[in-house]
Figure 1 (spheres, one colour):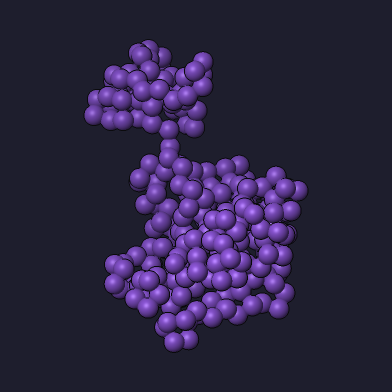
Figure 2: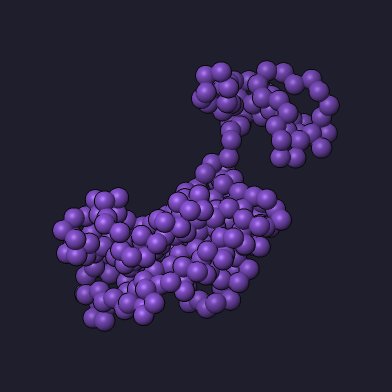
Length: 258
């Protein structure tokens, strides 16, 4: 089935000769399933569906490099609702959500998030989540090009008094969680849709030991994977990494000795 957007007001097109995107005006864009047939100028080929594009900007899909689909629809709210004034208004350490939730809410939360990004023009998504059953198949059903990015760490945090952050370090330094992440990435890469890839996502610089970060880097080099990590996400994280290493996360992470 060939669909044609007629006389699109603006088109973001790829100029192969120049090696860059260019803007075109008042042209047609034709596509068949997932393949482009024609971009710019007049399309005179067969068309099963013609749509008026005179008020549209036709462009390639956007890329969302950072999404927490399983939690953010449940986390939405004003800073005053979830932020802690004793920790520079961060809501990370109290683990507060706007809505009460349980494990059964993860799937619906993900579906809401994926619908929102699709409506916003996103067609490629990096999804950072803790591993849960059904995640890979749900992403496959969405139609997105998805990077499954399982999160893991060497420790967890909590604030016992609402003012200070404490760390509980895992006996295995996060190795079991890393192994689970690797298995999930391999599942994504083998998915029948052919649109899924993966990357490890050590959670934050303060929750991961230097040894774990070094292991992740070695694994990525071995497997040809990218990786994703939070660095300088909060004032507390910056201060904690400065306390441990004498530098900020943005300096520590690329120059760590591991």
